[in-house]
Length: 326
Image (cartoon, rainbow, N blue to C red; front, side, top):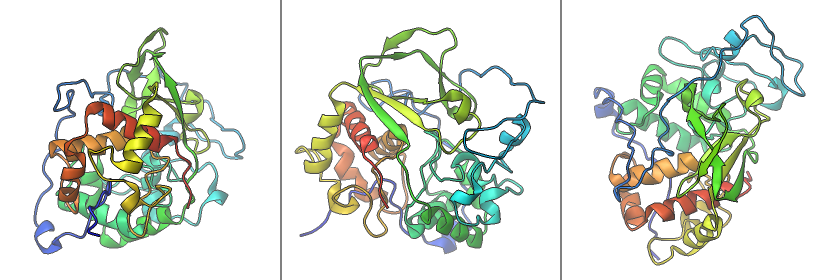
């Protein structure tokens, strides 16, 4: 049977002899509307507010850790906190410390690899998949609204390989709790493009969106790898997403063909189970509107071509609800 590769985030090696000489294009602006005209700014969050400033001289701690860090240390993207160093293998320098235009990988993706909704969960992904993705960023064939193009271009191939092997060795954990609701807290997007509950309070209809908030804001803002997120999804979306993922729903192909029966990856095809739903939705939208290129992106065009905004929300909600296993 001929397989149609249904591989979210899947990249293949590039013609590096050309790519090395090709400057990365500027990142495209975050879209506010889908091809159908619906608001998708929730999936492409842009900063529109800020948290109150914290006392710079007060040491910070998190439950279970013997470490303490000042706010300036927590916010240092070139030397992020490592609250639980005994929970991961020895990290290569590029994961723990940045240089030049290269930020430390552990700043956004955390030392656990789990990351935040605006970044990718890298824990337990195949090393070769991570390497190929980085090479797509480095060549500029893959462009997103983030820092990855500049970071990857500043990394050596050896650093990319070391980081890929480090994150591949990490065990993924349940990082997001999904809740089906009709209303959500009013929110804003703060520094780092992370969403927070509005300090003024209030609620609003969820509609056809996924709104992800920290389970404990005071811990997430400290880059605590033990404190995750709650994703609010539309009522009924998880069941709809399950049907689409497992059968294609007459619109696509089963994700399980390439990503495995439990959606935890297969070979060098990445895990989808338990990933950040906003991140997954972004990739589906970019495959659909042609913004996501490189590697096997062309093979994703037909699988996503007939998906509606409702389908993308439902698929992302279902995948996020699953337990990741390595």
